[in-house]
Image (cartoon, rainbow, N blue to C red; front, side, top):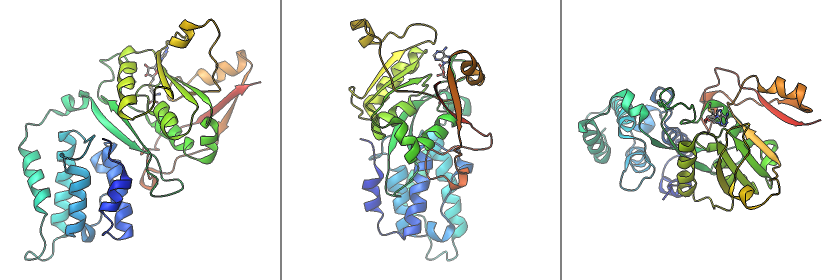
Length: 318
Ligand SMILES: C[S@@+](CC[C@H](N)C(=O)[O-])C[C@H]1O[C@@H](n2cnc3c(N)ncnc32)[C@H](O)[C@@H]1O
């Protein structure tokens, strides 16, 4: 029941092109649960228009048709910001008004019992990531994960959220050079966390097959559920619990004595000291891929801050 933008773009065709693009970007940021202060909300003159408010309601807040929908605490914060921006833009008290549906939704959300910030951060939420529109602004490739972004120290793993490095690598994989590394290849992902990269490779980048691995069984079980939500076939993606250093026990490995082969191994935000060590001892060479994500304000998908520079390495056999 994922809501693809192909459907909603038709529904908002009464908007001007720039408004449609800005709203598309806001919707992608909102379903990725981007911090409200970083959302790029449309300017007042656009927000005042009933057709824009109707599109905001239908594509961001209408619980009856949207899945996944951000948690109520997040929705409340975002709708509060949008309503105050709309009110600030009013110039004629007789003419300007807030759409009934939006106002009703705001009254409903603001009277619901709210979780504390800590509880809200630890509760699992569905997050929908939209790929950057590298070629076509109507290209809308999405991946849904289940994340508990506040569960970092207490859970014993850092894998319950998708990190900037994975979004950075995902952005690179959307370029023609990045896609060519994965298309038609047998891919394994190490320390996959939420499984975001593996699901993106299997669902949208034409990987021949993906094995998504992590040492944490709870993460693997969540990834298995998400594979189903994303409608990715089990022929395309499989999962395995794998702690590096142990042997990799997949169903296939247990059935056959032959080693399993992969063409590409992906990993994001795993170990900072790994690369120099592996090049010296194991006949591998590392090249930096000179790719940088655009700054947050210029991104059209897989939104992430670029305050801390992220390096991407391609490691191959000597
Ligand atoms: C910082 S998270 C990165 C998750 C994901 N790659 C991302 O960038 O969003 C590190 C991940 O590596 C996994 N991990 C850490 N040590 C591991 C090990 N020895 N074997 C397998 N996975 C490991 C953790 O469970 C966690 O999911």
